[in-house]
Structure formats: C-alpha cells, structure tokens
Length: 540
Ligand SMILES: [Zn+2]
Image (cartoon, rainbow, N blue to C red):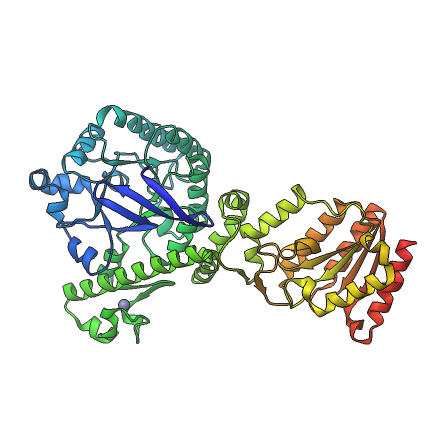
C-alpha cells in the first residue's frame, strides 16, 4: 500500500506516502527547485528548512542538463536524498503553447533520471478557454494517461494522473471519473495556477471538490501550484494531500514578504512580524539595503520558514480536530478566502460523509459561517433519518440552551424537571423536553450528552443567521413529529422573535396546540407557575 491514512479532519488527512526514496508524512509541501535559477540549494531546503520532498521540472532538466542528469541520476545531481517529484512540462505548454518533447519521451526520461514521483505530459486546460478547447485537453490528457501504462518500464515510480477541465465543472467531473478508472497511485488537479493567481478561491473549491468527488477518495491528491501559505489550510481541508510551491522564490525576486495570512511588500514594513532566524537578526530597512542577490536569498529563506510553520500548524490542528477553527481564522485574512469557505456549503454533505464523527476536542462556534461544519450537518441529518421521539410523548417542551452543559445538568432545567415530577408523577413521560440551541438546532434531552452537542463553545446571543437556522430546524422538527401540544419557553434576551413566530406558524399550519411563556419571569417563579398551568391543561 502506497498511502496510509492515520488521522482525518474535514477532508484533510495526516497520512504516510511510501516512495522508493523513503516514506513521507502528508500533507506535504514540495518546494519547487529550478536548478537553472535556484536561490537556496536542494540540500539546504532539506537540512536547514526541514522539507523532506521537493519538486523539479523534468522538461527544464532535459532541456538544460540532459546528459549530466542521465549519468548522475536526479538525487546526486541535486544533492538531495529525500523524495523527488518531477513535473512534466505541462505548465510550459500552458505558458508557451507547445514544447519540444512528446509524451513518450518525457515518460522514459523521468524513468532514466530515477525520479520518485513522476507526472505524465498532460495537456493543461487553462482558465479562460472555450469549452471546445477544454474538451480537447481532457481527451488528450486521458489518451496520454492510458498510453503511460504501455510506455512505462519501471514499477517503483509513483505516477501522477492529472485531472483537467478548468472551470467547466462537468468536464472536470468526467475527467476525474475516467482518470479514476486508471490505476494511478496519485491523482492531481492540473494547472489551476491562473485561478489561484487571480484569487478565485471559490472557483478553486469547485474544481478541487468536483475532482475529489469523482476520484477514488482514498488515493493521495496533489494540487499543482498551491503557492501561498495563507491558502494552505483551505486546500488541505479540501483533501489536497500534496502540493507544490514556487511562490517562496518568485515572491522573493519581487521583494514580497509572505506571512501566514497574506503578503507584504518589503518596502512597506517597519517591523518583521516573524521570529524566524532570518527575521530575528535583520530589520526591513537593512533587508532593503542588501545587494539584490542577498536580499532574494533572505526573502526566500524567510518565505520557506513561514510555509513550513503554517504546514505544522495545520497538521497540529488536524490531529486535534480543530482544522475548521484554523480555517476560519485564515479565511478572515482575505475576503476571497472567506468567500471560498462559504462555498463549502455546496459540498457540505460530501464533507460530512468523509469527516470523522468524533474528535479529540470540542468545537468553537464563531458565527453562521460555521453552520457548514460536518458535526452540525451530521446532527441535522441524523435527527431526520434516525431519530423519533419517545412513543408516550404528547407534549413537546422546547427549552432554550443554558450556559451549563450538558443542558440537563443546569439549575434552570432541574427546576423544570422538579415541577414536572411533582405535577405529573405517572404522566411524566408524556412531556418530552428538547432544547433549542446554537448551533445545532433541536437537541432532544436524551441526546444532550452525545458528542459534540455538549462539547462546544458558543457565545450568546447567536448572530441573526444562526437564530434563523435554529428556527428553521425547530420548524422542521415540529413538522416531522406527532406531538399534540408544543410549549415554547422563550428567552428574549438571547433569541429574537423569529423562534417564537416560526414555532407558532408551524403549529398553526399543523393544527396543533401552541403555548409559550417567557423566561424573563423565571426569577419570580411565575414562569414555573405558568408552565405548570399550561402543562396541566395540555394533559387533561
Ligand atoms: Zn521570518
């Protein structure tokens, strides 16, 4: 088995990828090494910056260093013992139109230089292209993918099967479906570089998700050209296990300084917001005064540190089950990232299906953006598919969430329970208590200890969109159950009238009895007296 998954969160996986040059942990970033213009040597990328793998371009190597490379082999040539991936020159097709090689030649060349992970010479779709051209790139890439299995002679190299189609999502789906029938150990999304350069991360979400949903889900997935650390958490959360970055070096050439939440121009900085060994010893002013070559190396090194640090944060968050929280934090670094995060709504069922049901930590709910989270989608789905209220229950008593969790251990609840016991005694089962709570919606009392219904932190009052969501869940619950009476305990301090109005409207529509009382009265015990009266009336 080439790829073993150890931990999951959202669609992210901490995994182990076995190659002939060693096993590496995913998610894995391959810094791009261009031997023709390389600010930091491959050896240093490994030894000083801790990257276990790198990617280089087989087409460029062939063009400039053909003989040297075949004699020495790629690892010796680059002086790098880790895992080496080669891209095929497909990106050069995208930029220059055509290149001086052919699919068969590039397969044999990658075998001869002894790469670990190799890419077929796919035909990148590009972004602003006609549907006709996009169709052609999908067909041609698929044809070349099929030919690989006749052409290749070695079995120890992991080949990458790239999915094409660009922004034509039906073509991406078809490309992924057909590519998935071929036994590639790694799949990839081909050349979404232009989409990323123009910050269309919402389109990127569509492309990655469409590919993932149509490929064998347990196979590793590579995203070509995912360069900036501020988007790493998004692509990892979408299930991109491998990605490569040339941005650390390109940005350095343009005097751009990366941070995990964006980019700054060196000239704009008074202070370095970083404590990497480079930034600790230098000021932005000093960096600006460096000779060009020295400054480029300085920036490239800092950029690599930032990339590595962000990747480690993402792995830690994945292990603790807190990748969503990390993702929300990063999404507020740029409006387009937040827009992309909201786009996950479209894929919430798929994400829920492939996310683990229990985690090591509870969840932090910030605002309505978080309603897409798998645990919230899962509770909603399970309540519809798997839950029915107790058979004896005639009265639904809807109580607001309490600050104490689980809710049934709160003082407020204990008072209600005491009242029910003293009033009804043997009829106790006829009243069923459910809580309405942000962000989960309706929580039947017997479930309130199930993960994560009590293991979350939410500030009250919730935002308007979250209240609307909870109101919708309450309406849905009432519509799909058979209570004779609904009693709502309204908490006007934390919940607006939407809960009250929706509840009433649903009961009127269903022609069932509806009563409500306000929690404002609770301190004077009037609420309990009113509740007693209402419940007594409902029972007889
Ligand atoms: Zn730094």
